[in-house]
Length: 313
Figure: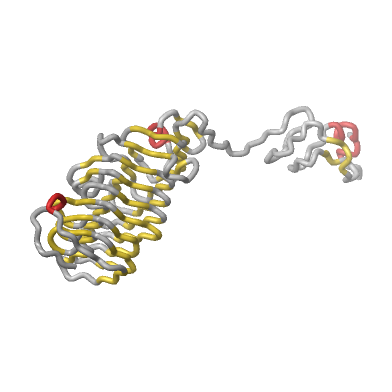
């Protein structure tokens, strides 16, 4: 029995298709591939047309940052906040190189990453107007510098986690903030944060405030933070489990480097921190297991942290 195609040989050959591939041919009736596909697109994802139309290339758009701004899920926006507002849950926000002025809020769990991955090239500067960046639980921040934040009680000046949950900070810098409850970062009760390849530096107030949470620091330095007349220059931890980190050149009245209350600290290097009163390296105000490396030291200094008293570690 003859096939329908055999009876209409001319029609089948003229209407040949590329069988889902894009190799520049169409199938002949006898199974060979000899007829050129004149409109073949070498990088097309799927070639489903006849020879009378141009193939469609559905490749994902590449973020073009020549005009600045930011991208959210493949769409360009002139401003970073517009991109954060538009990003879908678990979406991707790419921040273009440059300095972005203002305070920013990511209302959903997203990844916020710089265009190049270099924090020195992509800066979010709050200019003292409030918290630099507020994020939702589960967010990842990568390759950014957050600077010049300012916040009062129960808010962080640099990076604020609005509700308990996970947080990842990768290859980023949080510096020059002024915050009563954390110059750089505040972890609310029930959070879990990981800081990798990052730097928390030169903030006024505790560098990090941790409450009832876990904090892991991998290849991360906390240095040069000053909490005058307060406790914990680099870290103020209450009921937290803290692992890792290099804590150096931080200052406070009590616990120049770290203050622990009912908290556990392990695998940390604590060196060159200073306290006006007690605990140059680590001050423990409630029994807390400690495993630290380095040489915690103290230095009394009237201009930093209050009246001069004999200091001890």
